[in-house]
Amino acid sequence: MSFITAKSFVFNGINSSDYNVVIGWVDSDINVSENGLNRELRKTTNQTRTTANIYGAENTNVISFEFDIVRIDGKEITRTQSILINQWLTASPLPQLLKFNDNDGYAIHYYAVCTQIEDIVIGGRLVGKNLKFETNSSFAFAEKTLKNFEINDTLNFHVNNSADTYNGIFYPTITISTQADSIIIENITDKKSVTIDTTKLIAGSDGYKYIKFDSNNMAALDKNNKLIPISQLGWCENYKSYVSSINGYMDNIYWFRLLKGMNEIKVVGSCKFTMEYEFPRKAGCL
Image (tube, rainbow, N blue to C red; front, side, top):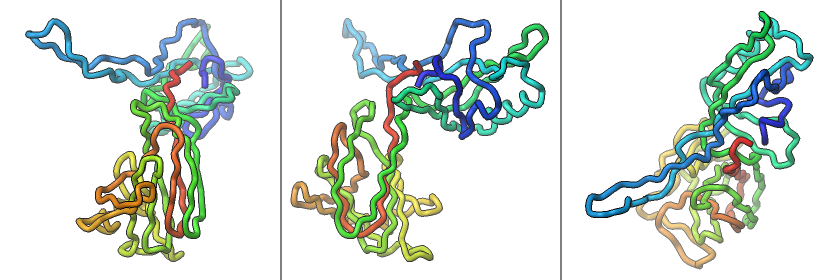
């Protein structure tokens, strides 16, 4: 994961070596990157008290990186090459995947924007570029995992939630393609479930109805990433969802989540089922 020991990096799907450049350090032994672990206590004072009331700590900054790039062969960067590198690094105004090729067996990545490109000129020659990246989070992320199943009737499986979140809870993304009238997704460990009524959904040309659950943002989306009204999912005043772990029903909407540690998941209903997650890591940048 370390950009200090990495030889190259991947940003927005492109490897730096594709532009014949690698990470290097030009006349500098100072690094001003931030690892996202700075925290600030949320507190207030009261004139009748001698100490402050502390409400907890929260992260105060995101992860940022600053490093140099140079040509692999040590030669001068040409004008054409410089333009192409600048186009690559500034192509997107939104955070893109950033990872460093350091051969570490524990792979992590970030989502970042390149916020600064400065040319390094020595003796009238463009010998490198100084880059700064700012991520959109105080976390790194473990490699993205996809669990794909074709379920005929009922399936039980396990997911180990190793996310470094504040309370250990993580909300994955779930995608379902089905011809069934209803699907129940239950976290037996959490003793909760959610029932999806698909009878009001329109099937595609393949005969399947498509639902994507973005639990983190409490949204249900169709194949075109448009919001599905909750009334079309059967989430109304008469809603209830069966929970096998308590042999009973719950009448409140449950946005599927993973508790810290091992979770036993049960899906009832014929469907194509995908669970997607990339657990956050408080790894810093070193």
